[in-house]
Length: 107
Image 1 (cartoon, rainbow, N blue to C red):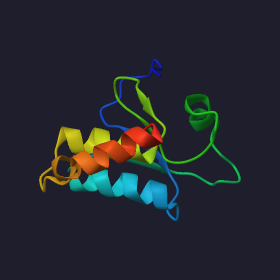
Image 2 (image 1 turned 180 degrees about the vertical axis):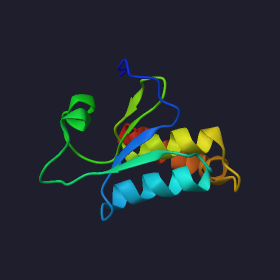
Image 3 (image 1 turned 135 degrees about the horizontal axis):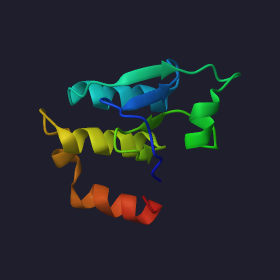
Image 4 (image 1 turned 90 degrees about the vertical axis):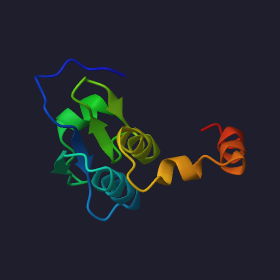
């Protein structure tokens, strides 16, 4: 999905500090050394801007500067570690066994 946005310099991550999926998305961004803006979400009062990007209303949701929206922590991790993976986490995870498991799960 793509949305026209004002000029953004850094990705915007809608997050919730205690959500394990949001935690792993933040971890991947930090490991990759990607600067991002984080918007802490109150799950009882979700911002309309976030819901416009992702109507399901779950976190994490990341809006990239080019307007692309990533709605799953796995997608955010993949995007971040493809940009920069100083410890080789992404490459090491691409084993035949892992790729087969993901294919069976439809990921």
